[in-house]
Length: 331
Image (tube, rainbow, N blue to C red):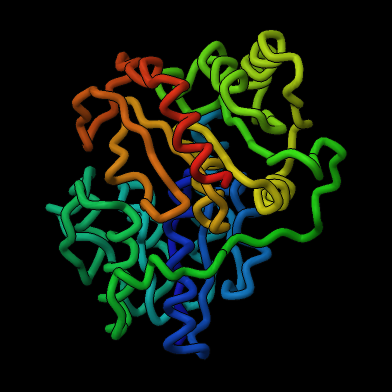
């Protein structure tokens, strides 16, 4: 059986979807799995042993350039893929549903209208599955795959998952300590309302003795990293990394602390201790609690269907609360 999974973006969402691969392969090693993803995230998938082939698509380029020609080119590229027995849209958006429809296939599966934020996407599928949109995203992915293959498993098995992120070569760095616990701080996120302030991170550094590494993905995030260092000179700012290098680094540290963003979720995918900070996004939905993966939520009321980008309540999370949890994870 040859299948294609469509999960285009973003970094954390792809991580939350990738966990299903090991459960499919556990039941049937003969299933061949290809993955369709936005070009900038392909390195997250390319080294995964359970993925046969990664097909990248440049929808973001088409949007940025406002180019119909680029969009048509990408659609044609997808339409030339081999015929699949099954295409599974794990994104559940109009754009991913259209891509799923363009891929040559015998069957297209996705969530039904009531289970999607963009319900219109369901018209592009010829088989649908019902599972509440407000439910935990990782459980949604798990149940969709379980339904697709009639897998004799239950969601409790997520708690026993194997690490499922891979890299091509180990990231070489001199900033890792052999004496102190290594802690990654993540100042960036997709929107300012999701970011934990540099001053708060500095308070945390003063409360917890560790070797701190700050990572960043763009120039704006680098400025935040530099502000943290200006307040706490002992922290180390990492160079900008590829996704492969980021996975390698996270796999070697003792704790990751950051907001609801991709690099924080990578820690969960690698079974590395983490503390995820939530302000305007729902903690109960956007991560999966374990003995080593914890969350702290602000007191704001969150709408699962729409992020309130004026909600800066993440700033109210006390660094002392983070330090308390961090100490228990670093024992």
